[in-house]
Length: 330
Image (cartoon, rainbow, N blue to C red; front, side):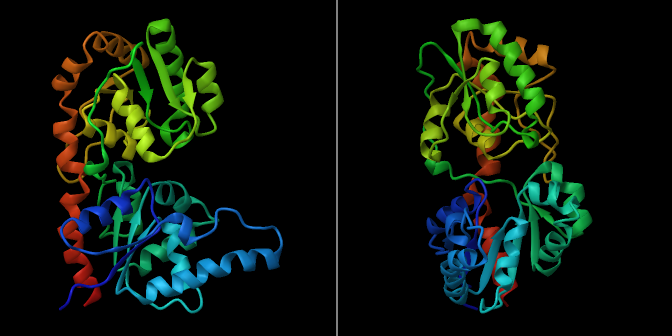
């Protein structure tokens, strides 16, 4: 059978884009429809205005789906868009990226929609280690496919700034353990004073409180610019939850030494956990202060890049997906 024509539909944290880019490098030409081309961000209040706004997106979906054999849908609520009138029926693979299975699947307002998307998928993946039980409850054959990254886009880690800088790599909201993170930010600010800059992104409902805790907030920026910010930092702080997301894996892959509150769940495939400084607020602050004396040494001791790069490189998963797409299209 000829290689099926594949469309990656929607995206979360650039996972789909990373897979498509990695596939291109081995001569697999998968198509990519990013979130801004899937549906509008802002919809007018009026019924007529809403319809007019949606028409170009609806026509685009008809066009791109008609040119593919298999769709890889990213995020549970996106699957319903493939059922719009006029959109050709194609088998699809679904990746549950986090909040769709973590929160919306349990919410009566969304449960039926998410479950239908899961039931009608030819295959289901889940992207986060905390989603194992829920994903398997919703779909017993669901498999783990991590939030992969495009290693080719990552700059080399060069902690050159003065004063030294610690960067909080996640947004400030509940999914990222914001209340604990704010406590850590305040304690860390008191511990390092003005000898070290604490930096984060102005993103999430807890951002203003983070600023009050002593974190300098940068405006939201393109991914490439954020990568440069992380690559120039001396240390990173990951989200205060029992799992990590794309930004943490990017920082680890660069070799940036990382700290995070609590402990991480093991990967369901190999049982490993991210090699980071972790524990209680006081323990994490103490480890960060000590590590700031020699971040390069701490990077070597932790071995974050050696652990993360083979596990989160999008290229490592392309062949597996290509085989699946061929089976689904048969």
